[in-house]
Amino acid sequence: MLEVCKLFLCFLVFSFAGWCLEVSYGYFELKKFVNRGFLIGPICPCYGIGCMLLALLLNGYRNDPIVLFIMSVFICSVLEYFTSYILEKLFNARWWDYSDKKYNLNGRICLETLIPFGVLGLLVVYLLFPFVHNIINLIPNTLIYIISAILFLILIFDIILSLDIIVEFKKTASKIAKDNTEEIAKFVKETFAKNSRFAKRLMDSFPNFRLTIKKFADIVKKNEK
Image (tube, rainbow, N blue to C red; front, side, top):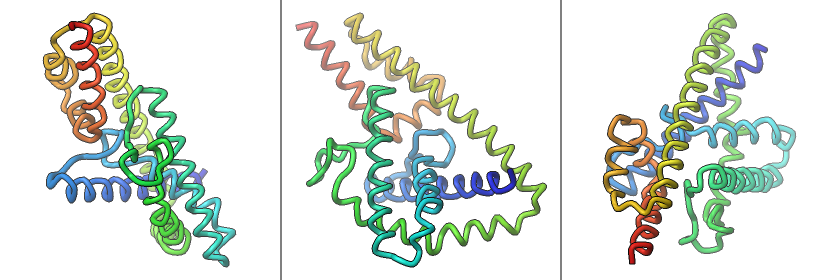
């Protein structure tokens, strides 16, 4: 159980590091701070899961960096593809889209990200995971249990709240499409953002949500015509 708690803390560290990367990229692209990520808190679990998979599955390839690089590309690509697929099936919305990139696969993964995935694998196995794990080993065992329990409860609460926001969005958007209402703007302002800054943050984090709303608006206009 102690080792599980340590791995969980490693997962959170990498998730937070992934969030920092996303925020930095968003600031560079949009020239403003955007709290990126599926969850409300400052973490991107996809990065945490990916890094932990690389650390645990590829440790046996430490003596062969070429194979390690190739396996990292494969694991990260599969993870990114199926994460995109599952999220789209669950929420009917694209969380990221590489359709405008060359050599993409269904807009879920693209050739442009393959080399960074390989480099990430090398960094995680050779440097980042050993460093983070060693730092966590310095924490007293009792404190590790306490910190892990608290952060786990916060994470579960975050997941439930985020899912509730997205499910509510999906339900309301479906009603709009069926009812042929003209109040799309009112829906965006009141139903999805009025009483929840968390919902607004999720909208800012994933512009594709706005594209989904626009899609429903287009459906309404066509029906009116």
